[in-house]
Length: 120
Image 1 (cartoon, rainbow, N blue to C red):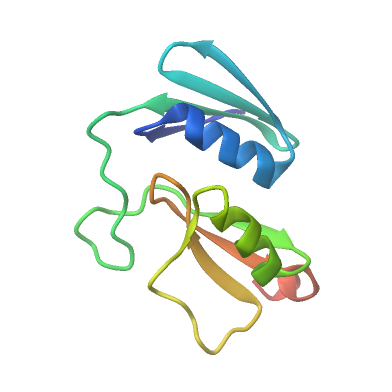
Image 2 (tube, rainbow, N blue to C red):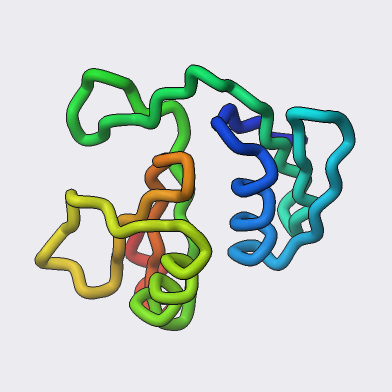
């Protein structure tokens, strides 16, 4: 199985997700980049008119959502912010084991503390 993600800058997204997932990047065609990751390949395809999801607001629906289990969500977030991610405005303030992030193209994803992952 493979996953394809539309985004404005495939190279930026592939480099970002390769670090997050521990994968390697290839660029099979112009306008496309691929990350060979432990869970299978992820393709990033150029979509110049890409509009990021506006979750939790419904204007632009959420098309996919990834959860990543990490030892320390806050430490992982700092590393990912340096690669182009950002903290999402919407956070669950009652859950210190979860951080909602946005990747460089604005797709939401969650960082979940590994010791709490069974509860999600």
